[in-house]
Length: 74
Image 1 (cartoon, one colour):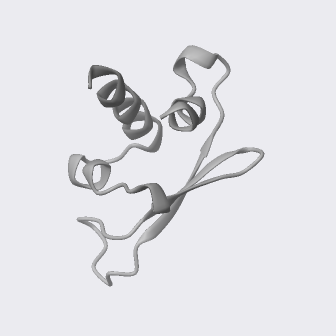
Image 2 (image 1 turned 90 degrees about the vertical axis):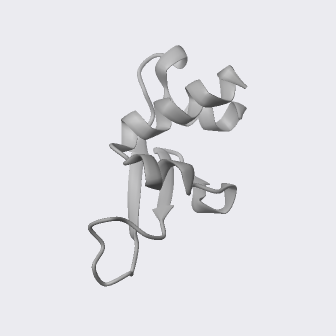
């Protein structure tokens, strides 16, 4: 469980996600691209219109700290 938590924290840090946004991430919100990954945030605290947001998270330079690699292995 600690490994999954660490992977989630790495994604949250890379995307500058709030706690509520991070725990709401589901597998269907993540899509991989050659450049990194695309993360769909369905609802956010500052999203007054309720339309959500889409974030692009690039690959890291080191495999140990790469948020994309962490999500691939999850």
